[in-house]
Image (cartoon, rainbow, N blue to C red):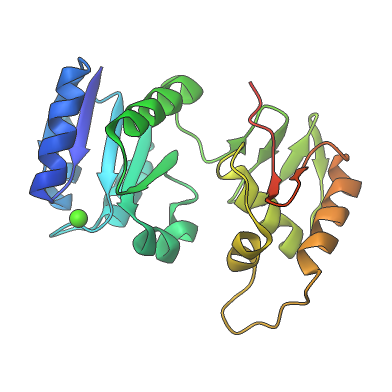
Length: 220
Ligand code: CA
């Protein structure tokens, strides 16, 4: 499979480039956003590995360019945690998964396989674990093919969990994702939202992992 690596950091780029070649991927490496956009206009790839902080045009612009042209190529964003947290809202419609720096090469390769498998070569904005489908753009949620109306906060909480099914988020993780910095948060607000979501989605939709937090199942 052919991969476009978009990364301006020489050390990371070298390491990823080598690891992908060793894993039998065909890799093209570009070091700025404009080159990425140009390359994607003329070439077809099975996957794009996209850094966000790039010279000339940043990763968000590259992503918008890809999706603006209805290019279905799966996009795996590689970025520092700070950058990701700033931009996660903007990534909703376009990126298929995220890998945070620093990462293990084995993890990156596993994520790449998962994204490609999940997408079957077609990227869409809808998040799913096979049971719940959540559309970040239209805010529609369906479970067992039944549409469900959620409040804004309920949607935000479910969205936080659906970004990575199987990942456990603590109460603090969820508060960070649902509430702004200056908002007062009642101490049991997350539990109330979970309770409300379970009433709407079924008690098994969100699992409690005792002492750690909550998750949605990974599905198939
Ligand atoms: Ca960078």
